[in-house]
Image (cartoon, rainbow, N blue to C red):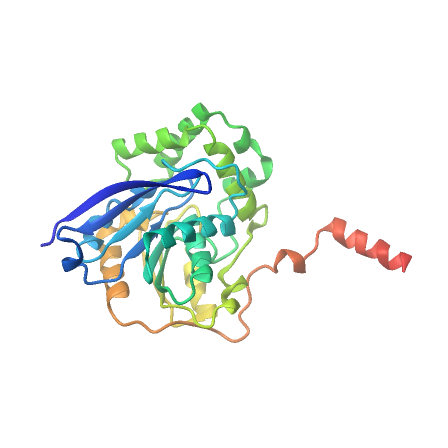
Length: 320
């Protein structure tokens, strides 16, 4: 059985460092029989979230798992932290790696970012795997909707961020051991993390739920790559019904549910998701098609103007 190695890297992008881990089989290219894969973690997490599946996946391919900006050991930029901004920086990082084609796996927020990377890199993403991903439905846990609107997270002190992370990991599960919990607490207690997480939530979520959906942007692609969706049926953050609805608007996507699993299938159902991922990434797959008439669960912002815009429009009409 081929052994694997993991190396850490840092590089400057837009005036700040991005940190990532690179997994590869010992012996280099001689053992890399499959396309490389990019792994994108979720909100308030780090690249270490993939450590339970990366050693197996890297036996015959190279993996690149970054700490998203504002997370882990990457820079706390003073930026918008909307999904498009994340995707733009991730695309710059991918280009710096010299990847001409690759697969991408995204968890939670990372799933939404992975879908945006697909838009920025058409033809280069060969497989898209989404794990309990944002951007596939409207609903999301009430505490996230409230946090996106209240602004309290933006004011949280680093010490409170650490305490909140420790409590959150224990509630949400994810099969993090003591060392991994300690690392998450340390990373999320860094100055600037609260600001980054609040801005991320503010851009991605409001009181009604998630702002973006795959169908908001799918029309911009000539063809979707093969797509797989994985979900735990006990997910307390993003409901599993988002996975169940995928077939309502996409014909040919792979959808798998894992019983008695929460928001972290890649950590809580390791043998099961590895089996699914190897099958999806390595075997021939047909691209899915958007079903005729499929619509996102909410209209784009410019199609549903605010009360202020409606009143302003009415007043302009009166003047005319």
